[in-house]
Length: 115
Length: 115
Image 1 (cartoon, chains in turn orange, cyan):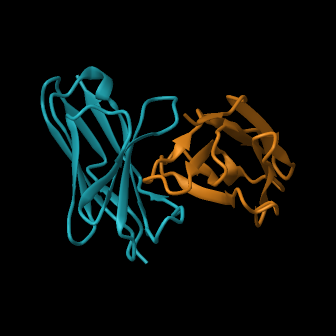
Image 2: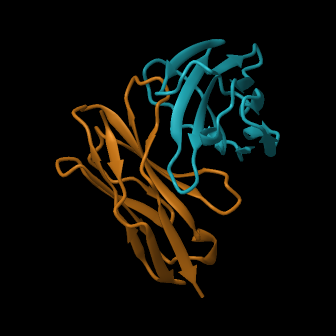
């Protein structure tokens, strides 16, 4: 069975600085996808970034980028130029290719951006 | 483009009762997945509906059931409610094309409290 581990329950960063959130996963699969979702206090889960395991190039979306280390089964999220609106719970998630919609989530990291 | 919507936003029930939660998928999407998110935890996959049939199921008992309608909207039904069913219930829609891992887009959730 696949598992996703986020070892940092809480983190804080000053506005405009950079922060990295950690995620490791365990799987015997070779074809899979990894995601970072953000859940602000409004509760709605918002997709931040997606990575296909077969792609060696790390995904990037504006201020958000990942460091995908397939052999180490590590998938960290870097947020550059942190903004107050980045304050949220961040969840790392795994999906096996061909699975029936089963996203497996970590327990989340609570990120606070301080002015 | 209309996003994923869910109703109601909040619900209070007593133990033993039954509840129905509703979800409208994002326009252009044909698949709906349901997740249960207990307080302080990551979401857990309940099941997915595609072409009006259950297409995959997590580790939830049969008293959790669902429906998908021709317009791709969906219902989650929970019978014989237990105190541990208190949680945020999230619906996510996606476009299923072959075996590709479709990105799931989440609704705002329904907060269920069982007394």
